[in-house]
Image (tube, rainbow, N blue to C red; front, side, top):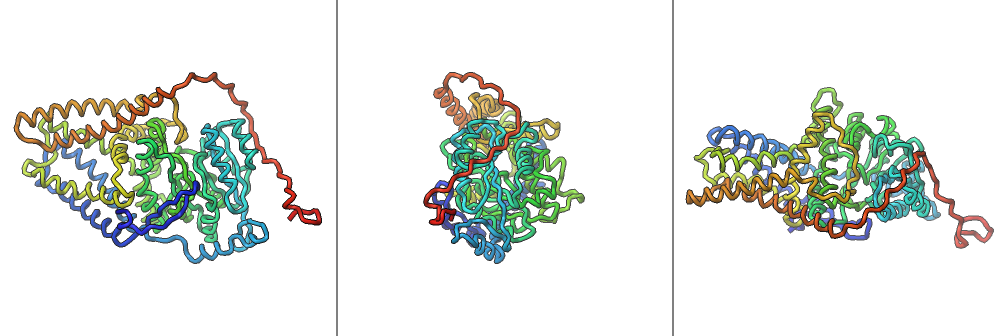
Length: 561
């Protein structure tokens, strides 16, 4: 079914697996238009004064659905613009002469005839050594002359040894100020490349990453080129849900933002023009979402961003409840910071109208994660207090018809894009409201959430991070029992009970995933290792050993080829 909606191109990820790249087709446009009509019809239905029910539940529904409809409409608008192709004649011409001396054994990349010095940064902060090794090896092996730097805020001698073995430079700074952004800015004070790429420690780059991205810099106004985040570890419910949640964004939304020069950086699998970052004073350090803030600052300075949907690096999605919670808390905090401290609609922002709208969507996106909290409370209001969001004159069939016009079409659209219905995404989207509520509260109160590696977790039980969800599950379970008993007594099923039972089952899936994770963690537990000695706080810059030329590389005259 996915191929019926989209025409697909094939590329290959860093592990050699074939990856289908969805391209916009006429049928996809048609489905998007129908989905948009469904969104508008549903909102008009809700706003009709004759359909208004009791004030409290009606107000909760209107607030939640207005946010969801706003995001859906603007997402549809952006998706319909996703046919824009950033690879123009200038790109292809630059790519044609990118490696002019390749036949002579010189793989230095050239732009407009000028050789480019390229740095590749791998940010490390305590990730598994095997994961780091895999990424370093792939980065060093990329086509095109470049220098690979391992930026180790985890201060690991083992990582230093691996970098030396694989031919990468190693940098360890004195402190961890500024988290990841500070780590990169410190490296920029040492490395002097014209361009620099960034990879998280768990993202393995494709050999052609530089070949596919560097030609864009033939256009003098391009500040960075972003590629998707794709994941290879889809073994757990949490990992699959986290990965599928981003599918539409990376396949279509980011591509659509190219048309508005509003595609933003996502922190990894990206390559920057050094002079653009120097102009804005370095990577943004005042937020844990340094990526989107850096992109916003560049756009305000008039720079252009490019997004391509080719999968040129494959990494790890968060596999545990803890890792997912920390990732989403950090991302949501960054979005809310923009909304409350740097509103894109302010006349002080030097952005185009399209850019303002796109960044407003970014800044308000995580409000959609709080909406389920309001909608989960609507059925209990009817079951316990007989308070209904809609007029009694509206039949359940009429409500369901308009409701499906909105939600069912969103599911159909996602079905075609992803290839099937992903219940893991629905589960995480419904159960994540405590994370996003906490993020909003942290921004309002100015609380620092700290820095956490996306894929990293601890041995703590996942139930330490899902207490609100467990309490809601218990509450909704009891409410479902009360609702069913009430319907039996009245001899008529109600929409409120069905709605509440559905919400209960969705939360049950999430709780079951946490329980399964807790059981697996307990079964695999091992005695705690003795604490390691505190690392020595010192700056280290280690260059890889100079490799001696092999006999095959020596000319008969005794020189090097």
